[in-house]
Length: 249
Length: 314
Ligand SMILES: Cc1cc2nc3c(=O)[nH]c(=O)nc-3n(C[C@@H](O)[C@H](O)[C@H](O)COP(=O)(O)OP(=O)(O)OC[C@H]3O[C@@H](n4cnc5c(N)ncnc54)[C@H](O)[C@@H]3O)c2cc1C
Ligand SMILES: Cc1cc2nc3c(=O)[nH]c(=O)nc-3n(C[C@H](O)[C@H](O)[C@H](O)COP(=O)(O)OP(=O)(O)OC[C@H]3O[C@@H](n4cnc5c(N)ncnc54)[C@H](O)[C@@H]3O)c2cc1C
Image 1: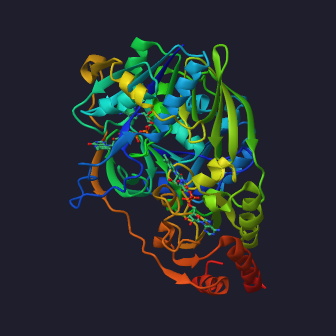
Image 2 (image 1 turned 30 degrees about the vertical axis):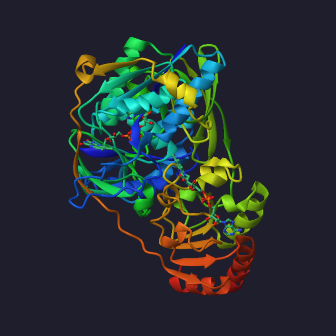
Image 3 (image 1 turned 60 degrees about the horizontal axis):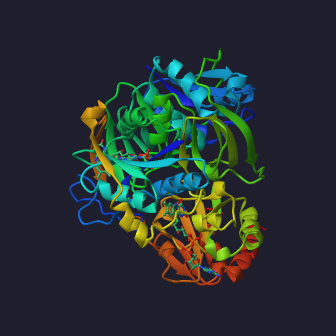
């Protein structure tokens, strides 16, 4: 069984982003970029399935402009076998378009499982996996916290509102990862060296037959309403006095 | 064309986030129909019919919709989509699983986590954990939106909208329900609570979380939340996580106990009306958003706080 893992290059989760003064977007020059944390979890899960003998090959795919291959390299250094880079002019390809590109890659690669992150921490859309599953006509399990591959099926425990739910999906299927699925490994130095020799195949959106034109027009990007710190109080009694006055008790 | 709102419910009752998403749906300016898909879901449909502003409730009551699995509910949504100008759902685990599936099948780019309806085709949504707000115009003919319910007030009651029943549609198969662990709780729902008390890594164990955070919450009639660190460490269940990748809340009062205030946590609670933080580190970032900060050991302060609140109520 082959597993396809889409990995997205995003602003590192430790970076506090700045909105550009002219409202045209977010300052991205000279900012640390990393693999989306949920995608690290997806790569880790795929590698564990391979190490457990349930999968034979792990293929990492990313869609984006120059330097996106660095993110694919990270997946290869973690242990993925090879990479596919759909090279675009710009970053910021919409989830529906990403899902269409991934569908085309699924058609040529024939994986039994596609594992994505539940959301990318830049745009926080939480859509791509579900859209891919829909376009493929495959079952989906979002927000996975446990994955058990059986014979032609996969049992997935999901983090839902109110608790946990377990589903059985017929393979092939699409999964999206939640935080508690696993703790991703760090790439070791030898594996980083080895990853430099692993192949990354480049493709274009045109050869996959997908139109990249966005459907959402971004009119402006602004700072959220700020919140300033209030006061420090000295005791629980003083605090309760304030809360009573504020009318929130 | 009318707007179709996907109800969040558990068959027996309607989740209060539905009334909040309804406010967003009504802001689009078209009549709103509420879709209740489930098995033995008439009670939820009757509750939806009472919400002010609802023009019609569509009840799809069939074994196929038990547990509201994404594949059959999305197929139902697609079968109805052509009659609607907009499809709307709250950004719950259910809404987030189903709506993108519908959107892809009708070839529409969804707008996720809408926090304001600017006009029927223009919406505000947070990006980068709420550190920037994007204003987007959706150019597809049909709008598909998930709603961040913490940003909208709940629609009122006092309506008796008609309930129309729908048959089940043939849906994509491939998934089946094996089981569920839903903790029964007498406390209010996190996403609709007026007061939330949250605990962080500082609690140190599940026992202490239970012994310190929960009694204060119960004294306040509050829901209980947690930081990711507390959930990862097993002090609190996963569905209590507040933050960028957990639940986004905006209660009247949010009490953060032993939580440092990482951007991912702030993303989930910084729109609360009043924020209280208890932390032994006076430089903890949580104090930058807290209206009232109390520097000290939570293990000493929280029991005092509980006693003072009991006194204030008496
Ligand atoms: C710099 C920048 C510029 C932008 N400019 C525009 C613009 O001009 N016009 C516009 O319409 N929108 C723009 N956007 C928004 C646009 O990027 C999309 O909404 C967003 O990229 C996709 O949403 P998401 O990644 O949050 O999807 P999610 O659905 O949250 O992603 C979930 C998962 O899908 C997979 N995935 C997603 N994207 C990729 C990818 N590229 N490669 C591989 N796997 C992927 C990953 O596994 C990821 O964890 C911009 C965003 C950025 C960061
Ligand atoms: C992809 C990603 C997604 C994430 N999503 C979320 C999310 O949705 N929600 C979320 O919360 N986090 C999220 N995080 C994690 C986040 O970055 C922080 O690690 C987390 O919020 C820290 O939790 P904490 O404040 O409980 O712990 P810490 O940061 O360890 O803070 C503990 C605090 O307790 C104080 N303290 C210790 N002892 C006492 C005492 N006796 N009395 C009083 N105070 C005390 C300390 O001074 C400290 O400030 C995410 C991270 C990533 C990478």
